Image (cartoon, rainbow, N blue to C red):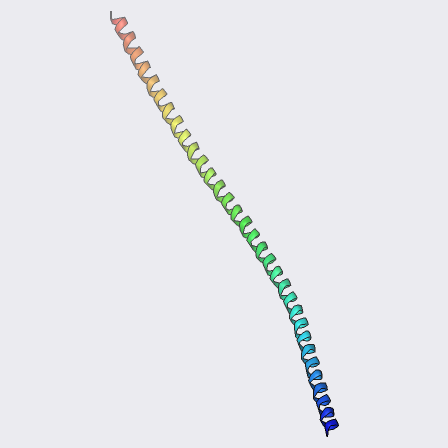
Length: 118
């Protein structure tokens, strides 16, 4: 009976060792699968971050281009306005010169008339 119990205990021990080996193997398999999946996820995260960086870089370039265009438009508008101011001043100066010239001619004519009258 003792041998029977020992045989039975050996069977239980072997059965437990087998179950433990299977559990360890299962954990090893799960760990390996986790590491593979984690590695794949890490690669996807890196790819996503790279894509985000590319999109950010494009957005910065687009924004810079728009700012450059707006700056150029503002400078062009400023140049047009300054050209108009210059033209207005030139017209005003010509008008003053013409009026001065006319007034001087009229003054000269009156002076000559007075001198002839004397």
